[in-house]
Length: 306
Image 1: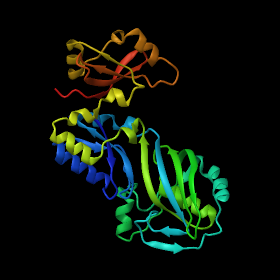
Image 2: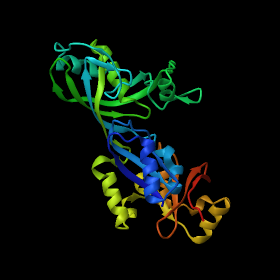
Image 3: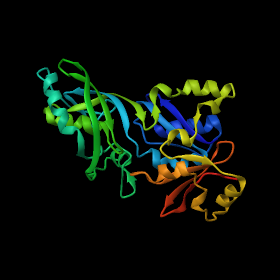
Image 4: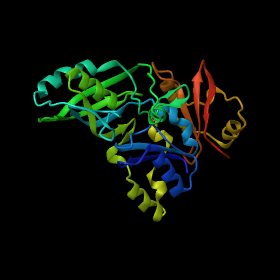
């Protein structure tokens, strides 16, 4: 199998469990995910299959969208409702307008400290592994991008609940945003619900639940759920090449820039374009990802396996 699968992860399943489940179901051992989604969270968890895993780095850089519910007045050791409660506070005086006034402070490029319960590595060890052993370390702050942080719904009460729409860049932790917003409010806050609605080109309305994937597998139609690399990375132009070029790619031989069609070359030379393009066989299967640089074709990723 080769391509990408837009899995809609249910609550309670870890991202690793999702990969293991699909490997067993499909028999495709070369399966990985495109960015960890918390166990309590639901939504888009794209899977990369076969040689398409080599393209993960280009997709994992793309922005993501979430619908998140924060509960004010409660803090936990994990930053969400699965953790142990650290503090409680009566927040009946917290208003919607006050929260709205704080959102611009957490929008744009901000400095964020990853939560202790996260997959960020310190000295080669994941933070959540250290946290479970009772070891405390101070993760280094890092710059992240929050493109949009808007309030969708507000529920008043002793522990007010707010639903937000978020569009964020790579490496942004929603649980850390909840913590920061709670600190600004002086109340504390935790994530009580989280759903990833988009990860790059993968949208929740186009995804497949585990139940649907199982149905497709049983009916022999699992391939229908797979998306080719060219669909997921449309900014990289693609064009077919003949058997001679494909054999040259398999051998790692130099390729002449003259084989690139004029229309494709115009795209590659446009301002801001990274110069990346796909070579395809006559059946539409991706052979390799290449780069045009200084009027020379350089190998980026070879996907063809035989």
